[in-house]
Length: 272
Ligand SMILES: C[S@@+](CC[C@H](N)C(=O)[O-])C[C@H]1O[C@@H](n2cnc3c(N)ncnc32)[C@H](O)[C@@H]1O
Image (cartoon, rainbow, N blue to C red; front, side):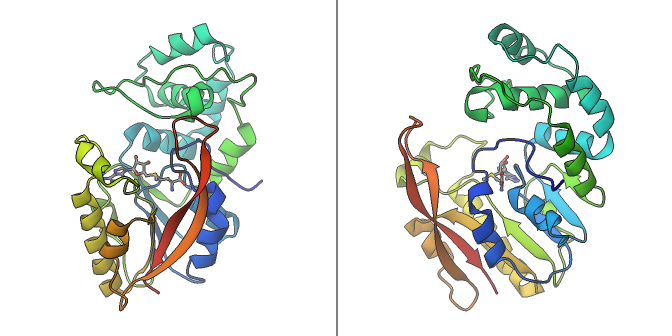
């Protein structure tokens, strides 16, 4: 079985994965994904046997702990998730949400349980770092997908997993390596940038990312970047000697209400 993302993740790239594949280099050495999230492109490339070694990183520590547990200890994780305690009803949901397991296998089982049962599969924590998404009222979510956890574990065996800022996650990138950046997107509405809190990805972070992309370009890396189609991003990557901007269309939630979905323009930027 081919591995697929084991979490639903905001900004997940499953629907754009064929476009991303089309724009990926045909041959490369190592693979770097510093904003890993659900890792849709990584799993697609793995299924096609295109990954030699991957360096996968995300700021979200709970997510990276989960990947490490799946990589190193999938059987014990499956045993934990098989317990009758992980059932999908409102009372169980709030009681598991209130737990704070420290032991990595239990913490990962909780993380997966909440991802499958919380509203929209959202991940959101309050100022104290506590997960605070309400119950999703799904009828019969697949909380334990044994085959996929084993396939994900297999795909991760040669790979390095870290949880730090994206720049630090790229120190080992060399000529011929492929770096795919899928950062939190620049907002469609300009003023949203100013309302960002300290944990969010600011304008300065977007500039830092562009500068890193230029540095990697000079090293001889293949660089691909996803972002929203907004003037700020088009200006940031306007140097045609380095970057090519490709436009794609994605179905996104453009309103808080799920029925207000629409096609919006996004960019896939490459340096090759
Ligand atoms: C758009 S999502 C990636 C989605 C992913 N490509 C997928 O298919 O699911 C962006 C990710 O960047 C992470 N992130 C935010 N700021 C970061 C930073 N400064 N360094 C590294 N990761 C960061 C977030 O935790 C989030 O998982």
